[in-house]
Image 1 (cartoon, rainbow, N blue to C red):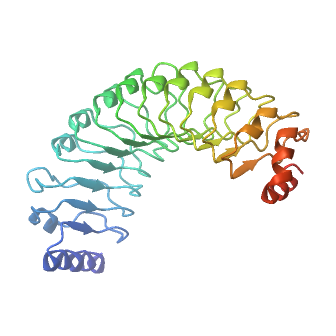
Image 2 (tube, helix red, strand yellow):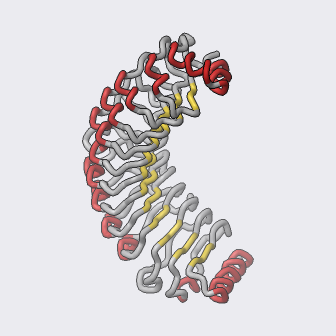
Image 3 (cartoon, rainbow, N blue to C red):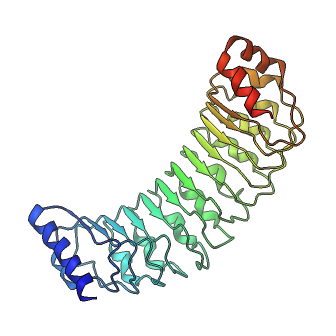
Length: 312
């Protein structure tokens, strides 16, 4: 432990010598935060990732300039102190891959947050209602979050541009998903879905939508309203058909349809001329290639090779 603390102090000395505003104490095996950190009032970014912290010293009055705090990977950290709500200058907070069971109510005071990472919190009992108070959030990552219930207050997170729910289990998307109209990136891969709400058509700023391996059997017609989409991942689902409205998604450059049950492909696929990546493999039964795509293959050699490999 003495050698760990010596390494931490060397990094703090380097921080002071270089006049930096960032201190990285990640991956040192720290069981506690060195007391000397409290003597760095100009500290703006504190990285404490991948240590063995079980608690945090009191930061608020000692680190008034702190805007970014990274605690991810401290699996032994099972609780955050209530005083964390006093770090009102924070704009980025990462508590991913920790043992947190709950988020303290005082976190609702962190209204300046623009990025919050709650990924891999397998023991988290609930996503609290107050998360809707963090209305400046632009990026929210809840990859592999534990709870099945996401509160309706998520609808107030209208500044979100990036939402990653991969491997999470939000039971009902309809009360809030359609309200997040600023979203540009939405990933719900491996989220068990019985369907998508029609309100997904409200998310007209989306450029990337990940719905791979969700169990979807059909898509709503409103998906055709997402005319800013560049990437759409629908692989490993149970789709037997595609809604005709998708022909309007002409900016698509990537469309993943692999591993579905598409026995036939619509002629309008040939209208999506911006496509550079189209995955059709592992559909059962193997789909027939529509004439519109074969026409592209006659004029574009790369499409001829592409289709030959993707429909086997």
